[in-house]
Image (cartoon, rainbow over all chains, first blue to last red):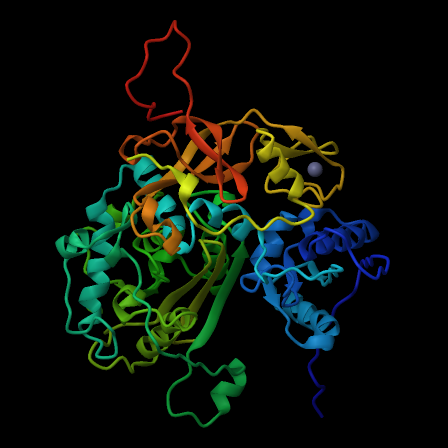
Length: 389
Length: 155
Ligand SMILES: [Zn+2]
């Protein structure tokens, strides 16, 4: 008789604000901060020990990127965070998710926090978060300005050039020519073409930015043992390691402009997998902008900070190279179906590792690094996937 | 071309009870930051509690208004159509002298002349119903130092 597996955990601190009929001038974010401070004081822990964050979907001030917005407000940099959207069951739902995350090594101390402000007269706009209040009024709407700030600082600090960044987009375009599903299949572009595209937010050119598309991605996950025993059409691809980190929401609040939260996330994923960056066969790296890809290559430890161009120069990054980069074309070559774009890097890694990347199959694909990046280099996840468990 | 934000019809700030004092300061010509009397660090954007130590002992202080350009971008295709009339204009992130970082747009300087590391000071400008903290090049250095034709490239 097998015992049912369960998460194990302990609640070590609680905090609760006094009930009031209405608040006057308070924000949901501020209320979360007050409640969190009470729980921390009750626990006796230090703020720096909190490395996990679970929040509810707060319609109060921010419709998107809720964990990053809360983490930035609280000055936390969690390595596991999530929205738990289970209505009135969200609170208890957080508790066993926190325990499961801790059992899995995703975090050691998880802040679960919920709150509600209640103005006598409800505010008009649902989007009253800090980035809306302090960045948008200066003409900085959207992600382009944020990533342009990154590229400008990278060029300043390391002397990297426009052509070096453009060459990364050219690699994606070249790989997309082997993927009939890619938006830019049949539309090759070289470095000169990228550089000739219109300036959007200097120094970012149009073709250094992903093209929005319609599309979708889905993935099914089982336990490793169950997958081995299941009747499957293809060989399973195994999760070998993972890492996650959130450091900020707005680019104005980012701790660094030349390295990001993917650095610790990738390091953790590689450590869990017991491999080094140079052991990887496929790099399936989130590439919303050329500069994001450049910083990720550096944060993966494939080259020194500022050295992405030397690393890429003269290297065959197609499926025929010793190490392949974004063989489906990356999002720069495939297009970005909004949030599904991040999953396209997982799907391609699975195809390569199990040998179903028709027309672009790598000869030897045993290990892949997959990265995801959210908001403005704010939210990071790294996975190491393997042909072998 | 230099940015003249005065006549733009663009998204305005969305003040909350935590931030109203900041915007009132802008109207009064003062750049107000919160200062934490528990950990002695400065805080921006305004919050209910200090992001460094979670103390609620935050008090408003008038900041120097001085800072250095951390990075910038010259926006040719704005994310909001209201800004199209101003393009190209310069969005910059400023390392304030007190420590926090603030995003702004630069006035009083042509985009081509902006450099990372340039010294800047706050210059309040009214856009619609709000007064916003834009930044402009700092006055040239003291008379003893030779005047530089453009802002220095390094801080
Ligand atoms: Zn403090």
